[in-house]
Each structure stands twice: as structure tokens, then as C-alpha cells.
Image (cartoon, rainbow, N blue to C red; front, side):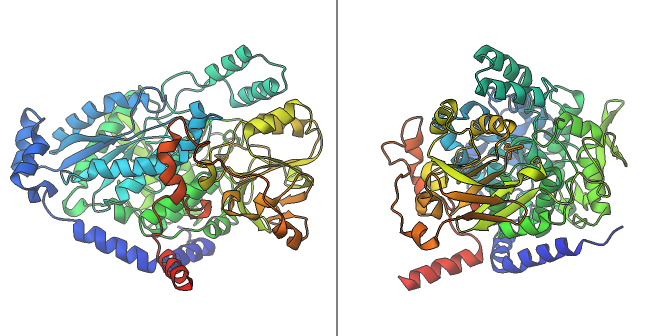
Length: 622
């Protein structure tokens, strides 16, 4: 058993110290809300009668009798998203399993679930990040009836899992387990899909060629198999102890998937009261948050989590910063190569040993907190075990002690890289995130003239016109949270990849998002302060020489600072009239109130103690 790495210990300690006041206040609220018997016992008769009026049979009598725990089902099911389509069967399974375990279960509410893959490059993508906080509010509405003693949170993708978690943490006195659906089977290799995308960007492949490649990649129920935010969600929350061990990457439509879903219901009943009582507000503590960050870094996961984990931690009264990510990244080695950081997909990762091998090697190296609470019991060693069916019964056995494919997954002793590949860079343009796990060392420093755009469409037009055939730092601004909801900018990547393949030195600087799908392109993303609130990026002009240096962590406009500050603004984010249609006008209040990327891009306002202090100081200065 290895001692905890000193940097992991130091970062955890400073998070705890920074969060002491807000975490204490949060736990006081959580502990005050907890109670011994079913919470519905406090409802007036009329309220309670409404709560079981629609139920029939034995469940109705059990709800009325105030003895059995009631498990809420909060689901992101819809049959448009392949990742969520399998969940249509879950409520019936859960209700039967909860009943078998001595509890009851009710479908408490649904939450919206949009697909970034469908809205990519469309106006709907400008609602994507805001949907996380809408999901959090929808989860809170579902749990607000005081009918429930535990919750099962059904969700997989992008903003959905963080939103469910944020909402559940506002009911931190309730135990909660996340229930995934699992990945679809492997289709067209991701490298081949990327190749066809670049050919299409060059005009060397037809739309039908592209559609055929995409349809062969995304082809059945289940989560998309590349390592974007959806699969990063699953891995991170499992290592945080919020899934059953080994639940993340079991495919849908299998007996094991069904058995795990049923066991989640039984486990929710078990931890809803008594000696095993495990409220989510106690599971998500400083150590669990650090474990989640480390799992993300060790696997080269989605950069979206530099915002999502900050927002989730804040919902539990914990103040996580980008400095914490940077310091942990410096000591956490890169142990996985999953597309876009390699040729493998998430099924290959699972076959190589998956989360169980990853947890084991990180624990043995002292890079994870072992002494944590989880929904499966105390201690993270439980997550070294993988689920199996023996004679139709669910059980767990020790996971692989060695990687079964070292081209996909490696131990700490022989990593793909010495650090996690996620770095923070800063300079006179502000602060940004850059993911270098798939960027070759020779491409990590780019100094070149800027070409400035305010939309993906304008960039695409310039590329097609041959205007970017040179060394260039592409700037796409007015893409931050307050500008237009911070859409992902994946449409940039095939064309930028083409320019790199033609031998040009290329980088991207933007206040928008990338989801970690920048791949081989050095991309300084989520730049804060964003252009829309007067950040320096708003004053960069075509031809300014920019330096993006992922090795030294610097992001600079090589322009006289006084001249840069004195420049007039030449473009602006969309006004209210322009930012309308596709439902965007309904989200105007969120756009006005959203915070910066490095504070989670949240609409929920200051939560940590230092935020309150900063707000008071601003009020005094006025």
C-alpha cells in the first residue's frame, strides 16, 4: 500500500482549507435535512394522498403505511439520443427490484437531454451548456416533493450527468446513485471517420461518403464510443464512487446491464437508512472531487470537465480551481490512449482492463484517495472489482492486475506520458485550457500571425477560399458563455487538421469550447475573460503575432500592451434580436447571469465563501 502522493495530498488540503466555510455550511444544511424514517411522514394527509393517488396495488399501501423507503427515478430518457434510448426499460426493472429489496420506487421526473452530436454547428448548440443548469433545476423539481428517501439518476451524456449531480447535491441528504446505459458496439474505426471528415473538408469526399462514414460510426443504441464528454462522465463518476463498481462501460441490451440496473435499485434501498445510510452530500467531498480530476487527467478526458467538475464541486460547497487541475496534471501520468487521443475506442479501453485496472494502478501509486465513501461502501478498493454473472446471479471479482492491451491502457510505471496532458496557459490574453495528450511535441509551440473570426461559418469560408494556406493562429472569439452560450466548435477541427497536414504551423485560440476533441490541433480554449465582457481577445486584430506555448504555459499577443488596451472594439457578440430563434430567446436570462469558464460557467451565482467575500468587496467599492 503506497502513501498518498505529496502533491495530491497538498492539493486536497488546500481545497479543503479554501472551502472550509462553504463546505461546513453545506454539510450543516445536509445533516439538518436528514431524518430516520421516510421523509413523506412529515407531509400533511392531503399532500401525502396526492403523492400516492396514481399508484395501484401493494405499492400504494406501502407508500401510505410510511414504512418502506421510496426511491426516486430521475431520468434523461429519450429515444432520439442513442446513449439514452436503452433507458426506456429501466423504470420497470427498478420498481421491481426496489420492491424485492423492501422498498418502493416512483418515477419522480424527467430531465431534458439534448445531443451535441446533432446540434453541432447549429443554433441549438448555443443552448447546450445552459442545458446543464436547466437539468440541475429539473432534477431539483423532481426531488422537491419530499416523497423520497433515495434517488437513482439515469443519464449518460455531456451536460446531463453534471446537471443531474448538481441537482441531486441540492438534496445532499438523500443517497443517490448514477445509472448509465453503456456504450454501443464498436463501429467504423474513429481514425477512419476522422480521415473521411478531413477529405470532405478538402472537397475530396462527397456528402454521401461522409454520411456513410458517420452512420457506420454511430450505428446503434448506446453511448458513442469515442472518449468525449459522455464517456468521460462515466469514468469520472465511477472513480468518484457514484456508480456501482464496473457499471460504466457494460453494453446495453445485455443481461449484465440489466442486472446492474436492478442492483442499483436494491443498493439505493439499502443505503437509504440505517447503518449503511450514504447521503450523496457526504460521498461528494474534497477527496472524491480530487479523485475525479485525477481519473480525468490519467485518461486524457474531456476538457468540458474543467468546467463541469468545478460546478459540481461548488454545488457541494467545495471550491475547485483551474490551478488544482494544473498542479495535479503535473504529477498524474497519462495511462490511456482512446480516440481522439489514440486509435482505440472505449470498448477497447474496457477490454484492456477499464476502470478497474485504472483505479488499481493509481491506488498502488498513491495517486488516488483510498479512504472515501462510495455508494458501494467504504473505500475505493471496492472499485478494483468488476461485475460478472455467475449462474445468472450478479457478483464481483477482482479486475485485471495487468493491462490486457498496453497500446490502450498502461500502468503508472510505464505511462504514455509523464503528465496528464491537460494544461493551463496564461498571459496577456487571459487564461485558457489546452489539451496536449494527442498533440505531438513539435506542434505544442506555435508563434504565427492571427486570423480573427467570430463564427465557424466565417472560418470555413476563409478555408475554402484558400486564405489560410500559411502558418496561422486562428482566433474565434465571442464564443464564451455570455456571448452565445459557449458552443462547442468541432467544425473547425477537420479544416485545421488539413492545414497541419500540409505542413503549416497552426493553433487555435478561442473563448469557446472543444470538449477535448481538438485532437492533434493545439487549441487554447475556454479563454477567460471572454471577449464579450471586455477580455483582451476582443482587441486582437488580423496579423497580430500570437504565441501559444503549451510547454511553458504561456499565451501571449506579441503586441505593445498599451496599444492593445487602447484599441477600439470592431465586433461584438450577438444582440438580443440576433440571439433568438431555436429557443435561444428563452435562455436570455441565463446568458445574462452566467459566470466565467474558470468558475464553472454556471448560472447559479457565487457559492464558495471566497465568492461571497469578493461580492461584498465589490459592493463596498461601489
